[in-house]
Image (cartoon, rainbow, N blue to C red; front, top):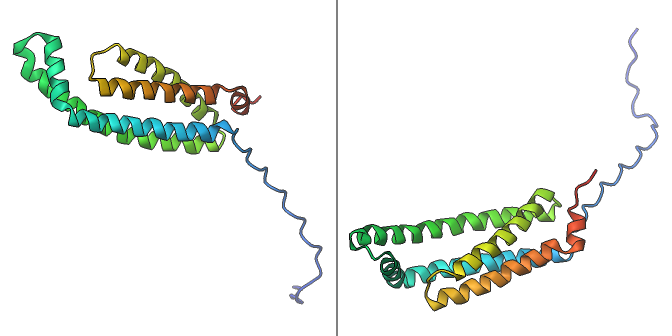
Length: 169
C-alpha cells in the first residue's frame, strides 16, 4: 500500500549556511597604484594628442635624423602610421589597465605580477625615450610618466602589497 501525503510535518530548522570567506581587502597601496595607472594612461593619451598636434615637427625631426632624401616619403608615412598605431594602442592599454585593476582587487597574483613587470619595464622604456630626440614638451611628459611608473613600482613592491599577493602554498 502507498502512503499518502498527510501535510506539513515538523522538521528541524536548516542549519545556517557557512559564511563565505570575506575577500581579503587589497592593501592600502593598491588603490593608489590603480589611480596612478589611470594617470599613466592619461599621460599616454596626452602624448598621443600632442603627437598629432606636433606631427609636422616630429616628421621633420625624423627626416633630419635619417639624412636620406630618398627615404623621406617612406619615413613621413611611417611616422604618421605610428601616430595612429599609438592611438589604437592607448585604447587597448586602457582596457587592459581596467582589467588588471579589477583582478588586483580580486587578489589575483598574476595581475600583481603583470603590474610589477609593467612598472619596471615602463621605467626602463621611459629612460630610453629620454635619450631620444623629441620636442621639449615630450621630454616633460616622459619625465612625468617615468615618475608615475616609478611610483606604481613603489606601491606594488611595498612589503605589505608583496605579502598580500605572495604565493600561497
